[in-house]
Length: 414
Image 1 (cartoon, helix red, strand yellow):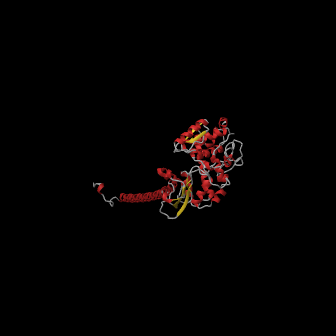
Image 2 (image 1 turned 135 degrees about the horizontal axis):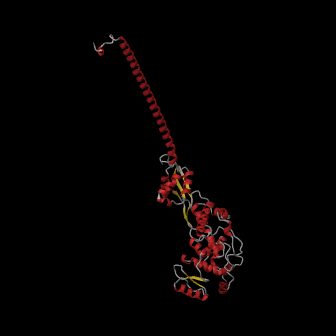
């Protein structure tokens, strides 16, 4: 029997048909599988494409978002390469870093105040920036702005020294010569001290005398760098502002209250000490003598006067008010010294109506915190200007002899 395994399809037609049918079915299955695989591959490619597209979109959006956030996080600052245009900027007295940043931002020198503050913190020399008028470039980096402010070549200044103890009349003359402004302009501006920055309470007195609103005493002596466009009023205002800053830092009003006097009375005494003391070491002691002569009953009994200063310098100040030049004490007549119509006369009771000059800081400190002592007299005893202080006339005379011996006086005043 022939093995069926070797029969051809023709010999078993039914099986051949079945096999053909099975073969057709298998081919169709394989084709279907291929189609499914193609569809899967198509879907996978589409999914991959969409994923990449979305990721790309997210990345682009994230980059744009980061770019915006970066602009927010990074302090806005110029690069200093944009322009060579210049602008004049005034740095006022007492300005701090933030104050400078504000004015520089207003003039478009810097792009942001924060950039300047950051540059300020990184530059230890920034604190050395001085007040004054500067010529700066616009739209520069904050770091370059600080560099320009530290360079004295960029300062437009008119440095003027106002010495301690100068009267307003002398100050007007100096300012007029240096600034090219008529003296009359300064005198006109000085008529209203309150408009120049002196608070009204500064003129109050505790001795019953009438208030006299004079600018005398409030023009603080110092070296000033006035901007080139300064006016008489703005120049005097700058000096008053310096006075208020110095006395405020000293706690001047509180110190005067401890002496049972007003700050204005203490200012008057400071001006007297500034005029009378021949050496800075004696400013406080001369202030104490002034207080003793005016307020101490013991001084009245010793000197034989009614709480009078008996200083010649007050008489000379009255000459300046009248437009006259001061005289040495030996050149003042008895009538000038004791003129009852002159509130600044030698025998006028109490303190004079106003300060007689503009005292410096040490004189102010001496009047606000004078040393304790019962001194009534003093006389210069050496060529350095130091004085000897005493509570009795007999000791004063002995001190006069010392002054004669040291060649300070030609003869004793006793």
